[in-house]
Image (cartoon, rainbow, N blue to C red; front, top):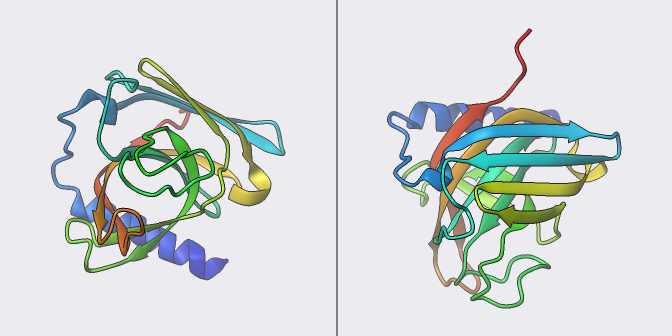
Length: 179
């Protein structure tokens, strides 16, 4: 577990160093509000963005740094299916993953590859500029932080069974409450 936290910490530090100018041309990648609330066994995440999520297209997502990885909420029609919620490869539905980040030099922009779980870790619902994810099991994810991230995704290899899913243009947002 300590090795996982060390790799996650080093990966996040590498992302921060790699980010010189955030690429926020699309408002849907700008998180304006983020909240994590927990009832002990399950957690809820609320995200509000500067743009309409329901009309955004492409391969992108959001995440919250967690004790056991990154809880990611993604959409990427044309890739997969890589979750229980996706019907087929063309289904661009917002869905969830617990993601491990690993170094991969083939991911040329950030050097980070996402290795997602196939199992859903919560129920995602999009409405306008809002994303609500409920029923995130803390037994799987561990405790969630108040550090949020938006990102693009790129694929190396065949979209039906990619060699790597690369994290692109990550931008971090901290919504911790100040005293």
